[in-house]
Each structure stands twice: as structure tokens, then as C-alpha cells.
Amino acid sequence: MSEPSLKLILEALLMAAGRAVPLDEMLELFDNLTRPDRMQLREALDELRRDYAGRAIELAETGGGFRIQVREGFSQQVSRLWEEKPPRYSRALLETLAIIAYRQPITRGEIEEIRGVAVSSNIIKTLSDREWIRVVGHRDVPGRPALLATSRRFLDHFNLQGLDALPTLAEIRELESINRELELEYPEQPDPSRAANTAQCDLGLEEVVLGFDA
Image 1 (cartoon, rainbow, N blue to C red):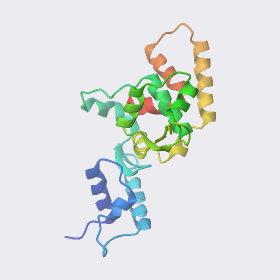
Image 2 (image 1 turned 90 degrees about the vertical axis):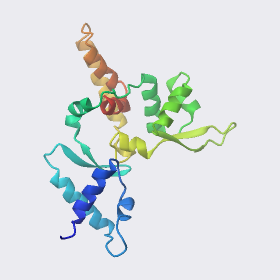
Image 3 (image 1 turned 135 degrees about the vertical axis):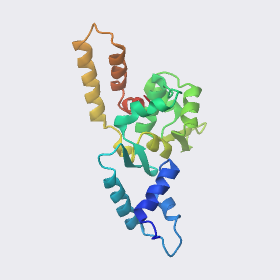
Image 4 (image 1 turned 90 degrees about the horizontal axis):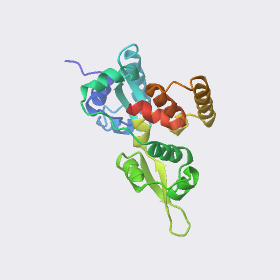
């Protein structure tokens, strides 16, 4: 029996891992005699990505590496496999996460200045427990408050290759403009589904968060 191709080995790895796997970790699968270089890995991954074209699964690259996942268009049906509903997050939590993502590294006090209200300890704990944020240092001021930033898990969860994939401020303003126009056009239609969409438009990153946790 012939040895499996590099593409099939990587496919088996990613299917078994069930998470994003960085290139360096892939290289550890091979001994010194059979280890490919990084360019060969990427070529095999590109071939695998082409194989999945038009199928319900795809090869995605995130900040944490590569993973095989169900395409977004099938998420509603696939989510019915699990009885437990995905968690719904408060507006305050989503705003806090958005501020950290766009203004990192940032202290809790600076977040409170931007939001104009106190940030609950439960919000920071939830974001930390989900491993979406991490402490990256301390501000050199009295009290040395912790500096918060997003993590690699944040990128993986929201299917982002890097922070530069976040919506730009111009895109956020456009969403807010569309939201205001909708409110003027439909002032007497308290449709719950439309209200949910409006909430997503109020904050650039909030649309990303709700989109992946809906």
C-alpha cells in the first residue's frame, strides 16, 4: 500500500484535531526524513481548499492556524444537532469586547471612560473564561492597571486571520447610517427579528459576535 499524500495526511490531522492547527504544529507530525517545508505545506493546503470548493465544508485560515469547518450557510441546520442553545451575550459585554478589539491594549478604566459606565467584573471574567481576552502587561501609572487585549482564541472563534480583518471604522459608520435609515423608514414595526438586526448594526464588532453565536 502506497504512502498517503501530504494533502491527505493534513486532511486527517485537521479532521481529528477539530480546531485550528498552526503550520509549526503540522510540521511536528513528520520525522526529519519526511518533514516537508512550509511552502509544501501551504501548497498541499491550497489543494485541499480547492477540493472543498462547492461543498458544505471548507478549509479556513484563522489567527490560530488552519481548520476544517462547516460553511456558514449551513450553520442554522447544523446547530440543531445540539440541544443546548449557544450563549447569548449582553450588549454591555459585546461593547466591552469591541472596545478591547479596536483599542487594545487598554485598561478597564479606559474602557469605562469610553463607555461612560462602570464595567462589571463579571464581564471581564466571562471574556477571560472564554479566552477571548488576555492580560498583556500593565500600564505604568499608579496602581499599575492590567492592559487587556484580544487573544488568538478570539481570532479563531470569529474566523478572523488577524485584527486587520475586523470591520473598519468607515464600515461601522455605514452600518450605523443604514440603521438610522431603517428606523426612519419603519417607525411603527416592532418586529423582534428586525430589532435583533438593528442591535447588530449599532456596533461593528457586535455584528460579528452575534453572527457567530446566533
